Image (cartoon, rainbow, N blue to C red):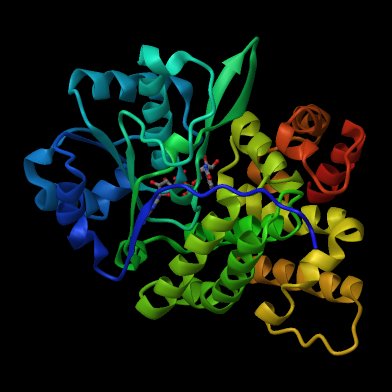
Length: 385
Ligand code: NAD
């Protein structure tokens, strides 16, 4: 059996269709009185901002409603200034991984302003930040369960997504309400759903996997495999939306306690340095990254066969893992997501630069199959191009 070390965060998770109605009671229990709402325009359009305002009333003392994808550093400064100006005691993120990442970045920045926390120590997992994050996710990206965020920063003319992790930024209250996902458009449903699937597969073969991350990953794959096609076909199916959101929760849980690998590292580069939407990057890269890793990870990938309805029979792990990757490829094709990097505005001549940036990433270097030079990644990106 593989040895492991794992971490848990103190989080309250409320999951139910209609759970958003319980936000007032939960916020009251935590004693938060001055909230900054951090979201994007789609939530105003969907009516969710109005609902939150009516549920929380005067507790929402400020709001920032135009968080952009990939959490640009300049926006972090704007939201931080708003949080300080209004002396908030929690940041409420409503939306996908971007508003949630923004809320974490602001929570962390406030922590750094606090002179006591400038000392470089690792936070105890249950230690509270000065300004905690409340997350109400509306996609399947899973950021609400993790203690990590990415911020996009330009240094020496190179723009890239930098990931920061600290146990204190794991959202302290997470409200999962499948009703908030009913208006999630087909492409975002499919692409953030594939992002969730990617969390679970990279958790299965992570170098730092543990028994709980594996159990959560396998259960999430089963839920996603069953529910995602139906959510894409009929976004108003509350049963399917609930199962899919539960799968995303478990995938986020699996992601939270392990080190990610090649696939996530490349998607961060495609997002931060080439502007590709995160879910779309996931849809393009996942089959290629899994295939690249097959010879080192077939046993771990093959564990998902049953969850995906593939009878094991007498087939070897290698054959099962190949069948799993093929089915994921088919799912992405049927969901009509972009399948090539050239379809999302990436020039072939840019691939070596992106490969080099990915090669320098800690996440890529944590891949179970060692990556020894950036040319390996250029070849991989060419396959996806
Ligand atoms: P996103 O938050 O960038 O949102 C994408 C688009 O979807 C936006 O235009 C948004 O307005 C819209 N949207 C969101 N919910 C909607 C809804 N219910 N109805 C209609 N439109 C809606 O995308 P995402 O895929 O959720 O998150 C991606 C970001 O999260 C990336 O920056 C990624 O790096 C990060 N992420 C972080 C983690 C982590 O653990 N830290 C995990 C996964 C993703």
